[in-house]
Image 1 (spheres, rainbow, N blue to C red):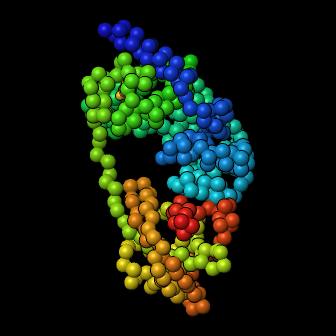
Image 2: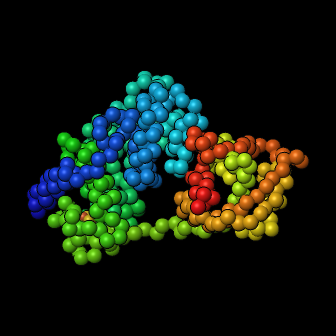
Image 3: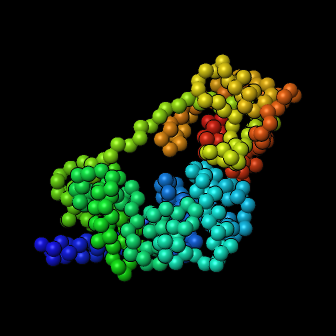
Length: 354
Ligand code: SF4
């Protein structure tokens, strides 16, 4: 029985790599095993899809071709290259880690444990990088891999709970080819991203189909048994656009802001009581505000919060009192190219152009 299982796994490992060799997407960070490029890509891919991250990766590497270039850059310049990708703490931590590497021995970590010492690198990222760059046989388990392996096992328990996670980790370890653990990990990630989709998995294209418990059970979508996700909360926000001579007025989030610190954004207030907008903006940013007609609505999501945002034309005057703290500036569209701005700025500007 144990021998049969092991033979099955040998076949799975072989089929997985054969499939990866033929079907893997050509991605810029896969063209070498350079630790710097692999590390930057793995940080970008945290909470971000491959197709979204790809142009940012290329731009980032052009701006900072080496860890030394990244370490010597100002954080402002790093945030600017990250602008629009979201989850800006990732960029700050990447920058801090680059400085840590350069200030230390100026060499990249040489084990999973050493990677884990860097800011922004958790168990998944450390395992992914170490397996790809160093050939360390450590399974890298993100949400996609959890789903693929959970389905292979036809897992009846929540993979985010301890025993479910252990089962997945153990099976993912068995699927690693000891000569090419980085490719085995990437193959599982690739299957999760392109074939074993949350809805309507494409089992007929999957190299793991012959041994897959969920496919054999007939309804793979039912596996693994999902844990409860935090509900998405819905919010309303109002944004004021002040335009003058082809430039828009933006404010900068303070450096100690818990979210998106240091990024530029349109002035805003939460809620949808339009009558309160002028006084709320005056309190937050100083000056006197006049709100004009609406320019439309946009939707914007941040982690599990979904915002419906109404965009208003506005004018403001800072002749009277100006609030202490927020930094303000006027920017034309060309100025915005190199500026670290929130993702919402791009959506609002697009609405204004339409
Ligand atoms: S056979 Fe289907 S359910 Fe099983 S791993 Fe492949 S795509 Fe997912």
